[in-house]
Each structure stands twice: as C-alpha cells, then as structure tokens.
Image (spheres, one colour):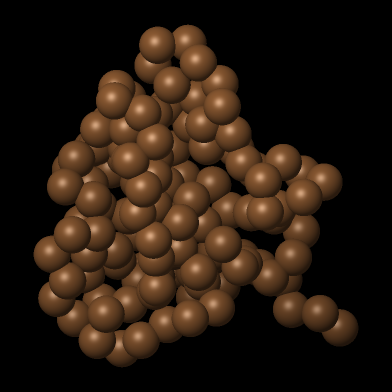
Length: 120
C-alpha cells in the first residue's frame, strides 16, 4: 500500500516557510530562505503563495512567491542537513507575485499571477 503524503506547508509574512507532518503532528522542517543556518532559510519578505506540484503523489516540487516578485522553486527530493532543501530563486516581476499555480496536466509548467494583473 502506498504511503499517503500528509504534509502541509505554510508561508508567513516574515518570509518563513514551515513544513508540517500531519502523521506525527509536528514541525517537519522550517525554511527561512536567504540566511542559511542549519535547516533554516528566509525569503526576506512576505510569502504570498506556496504550492506543491501535485496533491495526489509524493511531494516533489514546491514553489513559493513573494511580495518582492521573486519565486523560489524547491526540489523536495534533495535534502541536506546543513543547507536544507535545494532551491532556485528567480525575479519574475517588478511588483508582487500573488500566486504560482502548477498546471495539473504537466507539473513542469506553472503560471505567475502578478499584482499588476498580468498572468504569465
């Protein structure tokens, strides 16, 4: 029997991202994205949206958008005890990026929802 993914993720206005394991009811990992201290990274500004690439399978990718128009894409398959999950950062728009939903049919494609009304 396949093990269910019972993890949720929450983003906060101070830039923190926290991963919770619902099976054990505890904090699994805490991410603060710019300053890397053991298992901590901080996006340095408010988190607007956090999305997993799929809901029905093992977690693989996570995307986070911020008030500064940055997106962070985490590879949840690659974890290091010192630096946490591997990720890449990209500046998408000059304003706020309110959301980054993945395309359900292809999890390698996502859209960005800008504060100026643009969808890319």
